[in-house]
Structures are given as structure tokens and as C-alpha cells.
Image 1: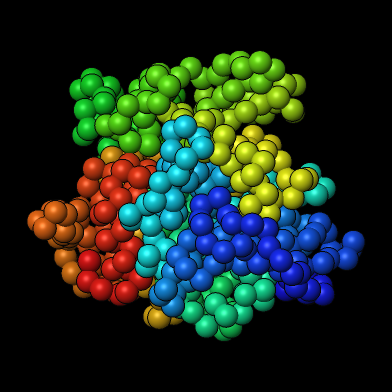
Image 2 (image 1 turned 90 degrees about the vertical axis):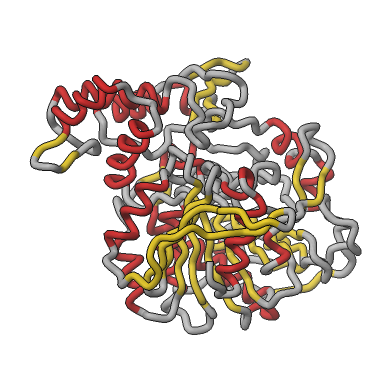
Length: 487
């Protein structure tokens, strides 16, 4: 099944300079769609020919999906799925331009109005195509307002959107193609790659996943060890967890049926995720102070991101279900990631001038960092990504990078390291420090272990948003990945 192919027409003139560039006016191409095809039109801002951002609002089948193209002078294209949901399944936009996981050319400043050039923008290395997915997050929308979806449908829709982009911009179709994402992109990227690798018209070269959710079970089990050895759990709680959750040298903190284990895990979860620690960066302060589980702002009930950790624990499951069933949840709930200040990017992206420059149609909703509607309707289908990774590795022609900031607790480094080890690939380079240069001096950026066609790499001192916390180190890693240079 392919994307619709309605009549393509080009419109003259331009929409004026984009909000993040002083380049000449953006030309745009409009794809007129018939009524049976779902919402339209495609309204595409063709990027200026100097490095800088441009935008397109894309419509595939019955989904209006926002894509932003940031141009480079290098002939590679990276498609970055920007719906990471800060660690959860389908519901949050990718990082706003101030807290970027895959850094844009300019960064929104705290006043929500001004911009600053990003010295470590990834479009200095490759053309960056940012896709807001699934429909319902950020500016992406569905005309029928039906946002129930799942892992498989999202992968297919992302593939169709990518195909439509290349149909509209065939000049990029021969470029080397890399797929990148982070957090729940740990599911989005490998499942999209399954579609892309079957399409010979797409020049896929590899994938990179940062702080990704690769396995629910491994992520849960590793987080308990991470918490204890980072000093978050006391000796007695650790002993109790070992006693009630472990047997014959193996621990199950994921879905243990032992009641005593469940009770001790509730203590552990309260410390790690509900006490006020910044789950996205253990050593960073919590923006806005220690949050409660919910609060009211006017008519809205504001709750925090429910995340992906310990979803099978009874108390977590019941809280999630009760929240989704509350009458107020049908219309008046806003979901904010904990310890994250999204005020500035929300102001910037919702200003009329920016919406106009990005060709956001009037029917598209206001930009919010998370969508409660998408989150509560999203169905998780995959509990681990082993099959997808082995399929990619079995082709013997794609290179894969799994990288983690080493102080993130949403998708911790230890879990992804265990996951990569579990793929049982041949070790090519034993675990070692990797270096980058800052101020003329070499610094340790983290550690890397290389296997045949896949590498696992940590970024020292970075949390969930690696490019935000360690921009130069992240830029260095991305450059070496794209250029196929040793880490």
C-alpha cells in the first residue's frame, strides 16, 4: 500500500521568511487532495539553499503531519522522528527548539520570542527532516479528530510520510538516508526501518537511537540497579528487593507476582519517579520545583507524563486507568513532562507569525508539548525490539548506533547496554573511552563498545536530552556516525 498521489501543483510567490532564518522568501508546493483522500492540502515550505530551517505540513491518508526540513551542504538526509514523548508511548511532540534531542539550527530563548544560533546544530552535518508523529502531537493533526493508534500503524504512517516527502522533493531521494530518534523512538525507529529496508528506492544506510526504549523488561530491571548504585535506595530497601524479587541469581523487578516484591517496588518507584528527582537527568534540578502528581490550572487538570517504566506494577496500572476514565479526562486534561519547562517554546510556536511562517493550517491545534488524547488512546504492541534489530543486522549492510546519556533514568544506559549485549553480535572493539576535543584539549566523552554493524555508546554527564546536556559531545558522536568514522 502506498501513499495517495493526488495532483501536484506549484504555487508562485512565497510565505515570507521563516521564523528562524533571514533567507529569501520560502517557496512552497501545494498538494491538492480530493475529498476521499483525507485532509489537505500538503503545504510545503521548500528550504532555502543556505543552511537554515524550513517547514512542511504534510498530510498522509487521514493524517496531517508536520515535517521540518533543515538544510545542510552535505549530501545525507537524516529523518528524525520527533515524537519521543519524553519516555512514553505516543503522546508528546519531539523536543521544542530549546531542549533539543536532535538539535535544530536555532534555539528558542527563555523569553519565548528571541532565537539564538546553535553552534552544534546537526544540519551542519546532514540535511535534517524532523517529523512530528503520530498525528495529534505538536502541530500534526487528524481532520476526523480520531487519534487512536498503535506501534504498527505509526510505523506505516511514518513510512508513507517519508515516501511523500521524497515524491515532493525528489532532489533528496538519492541521498544517504539515516533514521534517528530517541526515547519512544526506540520503538518508532526500528519499526520504521523495517518498512524502509524493504523499499529499494530509499537509500537507507543506518539508524541511531538515543536513550531509547528497547525493552520494557530490561529497562525496568536495570533501573533498579541504576537507582541503588547511584545512592537513591537505602541498604535495607535494596536487601528487601533482593529477598522478595530475586531467586536463583535472577531478579524480576518488571512483573513479579510476589506481593512483598510489589510492595517494595512501590517504595522504589516512589523514590525514583515520584519524590521530585529529575527523571530525565538525575543531577539536574527539577524545573518548577518538586511536582505533585496532579494540579489544577483554571479549567485544566494538569498531570505529569506517565512514562514507560514499571507499567505492569499494579499501582501504576490502576492509577493510569483511573486517570484515563475520569470524566474530566475527556476534554480538560493537560499532560506535562515532569521537571520540564515548556513555557518559552509553547509561546514561540503558538505565535501567529511563527504559525504562518511554518505554513500551519488554521485547523491545526495549538502546539502543546504533550497530547493527553493521543497518550490515552495509544496501544503498545511491542514489548521489545529484538526482532527488528536482528532483522537489520542480518542484512549486513546497515550501521546502527545506540547511545545513552549516562544520568538519564527514563531510559537508562544500563538497560540499553544490556539490550545490545543480548543481541549476541561479534565484538569488534572492546569497551573503551571515546574522546572529543574541547578548547584544544581531548576530553573523555563517555564509553563505547563496538560490535559488527552496531555500537553502544554512553555520553558522560548527559541525561535524556543528550544534545541539550552535552552539545559538543553529541555533535561529535553524530558526525562520526554519519561519516562512518571511528568513535
